Amino acid sequence: MAMQGKLSDMTVADLIQHNCQDRKLAQLTIDHNGEQAVLYFKNGQVLHAALGNLSGEEVIYRILAWEEGLFTLKNEVEAPRTSIKRTWSGLLLEGARRIDEAQVAFSSNQSKPTEVHSMATKLEEVLKGLAGEVNGYIASAVVGTDGIGIAEDLGNSKTDIEAANAQATLLIKLVDTSIAKLRGGNLEDNLLTTDNAYILTRFLEGKSYFLTILADRRNASLGNLRLMSRIYAERVSKAIPR
Image 1 (tube, rainbow, N blue to C red):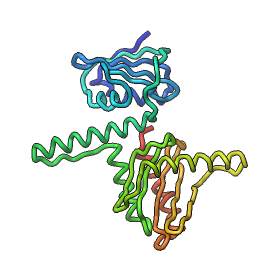
Image 2: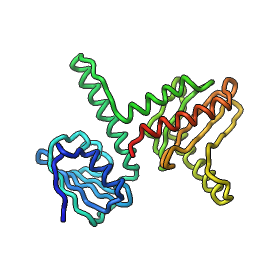
Image 3: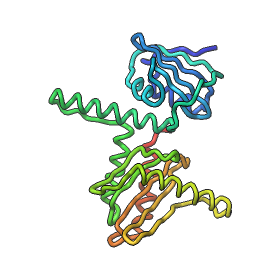
């Protein structure tokens, strides 16, 4: 039997989180002001989303702003195809970021200050706090194991963050797999040392994301770097939706 309800009682973000955390195989249909969006869930992720001629992640970002409408959830319905690769929490964070940007733009046009609160801005605030605690700090990022960054603080750095995230993901996965094969226990952190910098990477709780910190080797202290990575990994974990 299908479950039905109103968005005024359960938001789009709540519906996505609920279905992904319960690892449902399901189809979610949402009707809003003459538009209909259809989402498909499997194994804790959103596999596909469609809205008219639009499909994929952009559908999620559009419907997260819907506050009124009706939804219907049908279990055991397979997705016709896969159009989304990003993790469900990554989708919510990116959606929150976009909503915040729209609110700030609207506020600027109206010449009124707007106080913005979201998961995305919380993460960025945490990283800015990290910047003030790490000696020789250059940049930091929170990245999913799919290689997609969900937050970063680059300071004055000109780092190619997308390329760096992709390389860091490949590296930490390789190191983690190697340690598991060697039965070396749980990976605490991974340190790369270059002529100019330290690059420290640490998994967050659940190992779906990791924190990477780049610091100037001339000014950095390894003790300080490892301590701050441990403290801020916990703070970042608390800011990410479960």
